[in-house]
Image 1 (cartoon, rainbow, N blue to C red):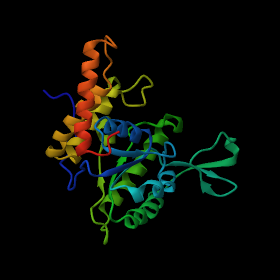
Image 2 (cartoon, rainbow, N blue to C red; image 1 turned 45 degrees about the vertical axis):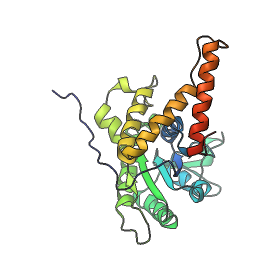
Image 3 (spheres, one colour; image 1 turned 180 degrees about the horizontal axis):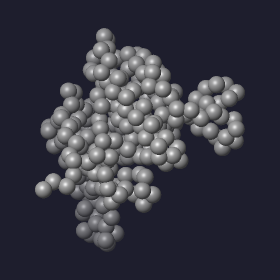
Length: 266
């Protein structure tokens, strides 16, 4: 008897390799996946100007990372935005200004598409992955959060199915939202705030991401590099002992050998 609904995801039409430079932008769910990638020494840049939540704010910073990236992973968290009354522009951060300075409104599907379709076309040589954050924005209200996620889902569905003329690789969607909401759907998979995914959940989503976007050959490379990460983050029970010194020497030798193959290792 099966007590959960499995989100069945096929391997992607294109995949990520260690030679790729990967940029992640968006909600704190992007940070979670970036941290997992860092454990395996992928070449990662994540939210260099801070965590971003809505499609407009993410778009404001796409030019900061896209020129240097091969793969761009975009996570939309909410369709709700704050518009500065003085400039009539969506702000990325309210900077602790009074709420009376802003108008809060929900983006329309057409607005998101009109904003992001040209971005995908501008960076036609990049590979885009879109995902929707499973983190609920409870401050918006539960009903409002559901409406917001629906807007994002419909907008992304359109974005990944547009017939782009010059885009080299079709943008893809990764169903992180569905994995949490439909497959895991239990509060034991949440952190203490009952909103953010737990470490176990992030690890499970990461496994699914690897299954979809990483080839078997690259996964074998990941095993070697993760072994280095584990060794370098190992806490000795007896610091300064002969065993500890020998372990550190072996780890340094392991690092030097891998650095010859992966020169970006630090």
